[in-house]
Image 1 (spheres, rainbow, N blue to C red):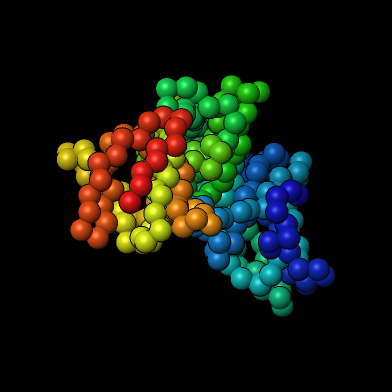
Image 2: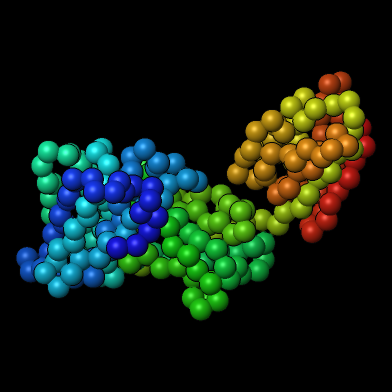
Length: 267
C-alpha cells in the first residue's frame, strides 16, 4: 500500500474492506492498481488517493479507513472495468468485486509552449471526479500512459511547476489514443501603486474574438492571485503571454505580456 495514508487512516480504526479482481476468464487477476479516493476530497486540484495492488489470488485489503464513502478506480495494463463506490462501516467488513474486461489505453504528452515538458504530472478525471494522477520525468520521455481504460468520456489535465493545462476531454473507445496537452508560456505582471487594491481591477484579453476577463480577486486556470508587497504594490505570476487591458475604476491601461519577463506598470 502506498499514497498519503494519513489523509484517510485512523490508528486502530475497526474498519475493513476487501477487494477481489478477476479477469475475463473468471480467474484471479493480479497486478490491478486500485485507486481509492475519499468522496470528501474529489476536487480537480486537491484530491489524493491510496493505491493498492491485487495479489496472486486477485485480492487486496484496506483497513483503518474512516467511516464514509470512497470511490475505487481499478487500473491494469490490459483490462479495465468501471469504478465503484465503497461504503465503509464500523460494524461490519465490506467487499467489492471487479470483473476486468479488455479495453483501450491513453498516452499523454505535455508541452510547455512549443517544448516538451519532462517533469510534472497528468491527472485523469471522469464526471469531474479525479480517478488517478501519474507523474512523469525524463525517464518516461515526458510521457504518461493510462492502460486498459473502459470506453467512455474522460478529461485529462497536466500540471508542470504549478501551471495547469486547459482540461481536455477524451472519448475512449476500443483503440489506443495519443493526446498532447499544452501549457502556454507565462510571465509576470507587477503593478506599482499605493492607492488601488487588486480586487478593484481586472485583466482583460484584448483578443476581441475571445475576450476573457480575469479578476485579480480570484485565481483562474491561467494565472494565480496577486502577491501583495510591503510597499503596497502587487505581483501576479502565471499570466499567459499576449496583449491585455488592465481595467479599474475609470481607467484602462493597455499591456503586453512578454514571455519570461516581469511586465511593470505604475498606477
